[in-house]
Image 1: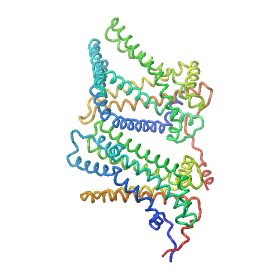
Image 2: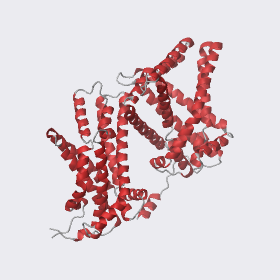
Image 3: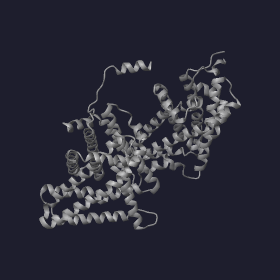
Image 4: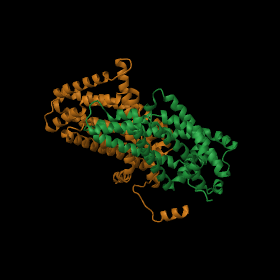
Length: 280
Length: 327
């Protein structure tokens, strides 16, 4: 018998059954239909342009990126399914948050109270996720615009490709830092019953002093992206690359709420009831 | 002395200027992407049109001719006519849904309006930051002010466009009329007085709205329109003092821009000359306009008999106190 680890990732794998139950459907929907293959396609194309000497007529990097990274990537038949996926994502995040919070506070893994709690915060969860999606899309649009400006000025294609890659990574790092700063806002909003904007402000104050968590989140995000793209690239000849994307979404849908609640409990200094049970 | 202190304000707030520049760059990038999304090729076509207009080439020829003394007014009239023809053709070649010429003109006017409004999108934020610095030597986050005062910025840009647009048109037509009148009487050298008159009129237009932004920032509760009214009322007591300082800055901006236009004659083939010139002159003018804002702010403080900080002061010991408070 031993004491349980208090890390969020350990919690996630220990309690993966109830979390999987909530997360699997949105993860599969988003993994299949959210236009994930655009980034890999762009990377492939960029490598090809680079090899051909970086002078391709009739190709503008900004225009190509517009179709691979911005909201346009959803603008086909699958657009509606992605919308359904996001709605389910909101519901699953709400349920996971409420379940995890209840589990950590009371030591009860499943309860009807958790479901009731989840519905009481669903509006805030939806608003929060909408905000994050909007920030992500805006940052991608800004990246595409900057690349277009660089092309208009007359930079060479190789330079534009390098510039675009650097900007993409920078935008992702910034986006992830914002997520890290706002990490605690949903648990704060749920447990202390603050309004979402107050909770976000409070969360950024709390997390501003815990740079290591934000940094770890950024590193984990970049690592998971790289791993996903590598696996997807290896699986793409078999047309099985969607498995990598599904796993990617599954991991983040399950992990982020666990991390948020765990960090909130650490910050608030509340004892975690779920750790009292010893395991083998 | 006051002028030097005002320049000190601008030097000590260079970070605000860089942030404003960066913010405008991001806004422009966002607008370009939105335009690409909505009109597929619009931004590319606009840039092609800018290139085919050869505005930089036109100005470069005129400036070189004037500096060498070989300026020919009849040739200039032909060049100007060509220029206007090119602009008309470019506007007509703008794509639209219905293939109607009128719609192309409307799109061109909308593009100009959007550009005019974007140029001043960060003005209110900068004014608030300067006001904060000059009254209490404090610095608050730029982004925070940008989002907090976004509504006010929008109202300001809209009203500013409505007021200054007709004034700009008046100046252009007035200077053109002056030039034509002098062309008949004095022949070739009339271009220089016409340019000077244009600069003076443009400065007067700027000075007319000089106290608007300081009033918005200093009296936070007042609406944008009332701030304009109060600003103009206050300005009447010190118009010429503000005028010559603004004139000096604008003259410097114009001279530097002329220098850039002459210097960018022989760029490498790979670079798009007109775009490089455009970017360089925009940066120069943005720096100049930032300095003008600082000068106007200082003048506003003087007019209201208020002292102001022109330098950053660091007080020893604040970090220790803050650390203790956190503990």
